[in-house]
Image (cartoon, rainbow, N blue to C red; front, top):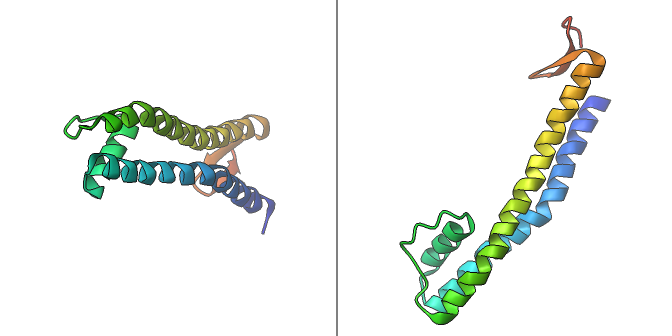
Length: 127
């Protein structure tokens, strides 16, 4: 394995390693919120999952709404945690994408190379 492939694999592993805890927490929040709404509101699990996803992604259609006081109180708190988790997850992925784009620009500038689908090549076409 050459150094370029090692670095690319290492960066993919870093993305997975850094985003996996956030993804797991997000999934726990989604399914935990769904169970909570199912129990608090007496909704079918699919309706509770639908409401949870629509709420956490800030879509908020308004076709399903909590009817009980405890459900309304839960809804006042839960979206803050869920939406924060979505933003955190996006920030991890965005950080990885922008870091890679920045590294390519640095390589282009310092080593007079340009990106293509197979990696970086010299401006004269040589690898």
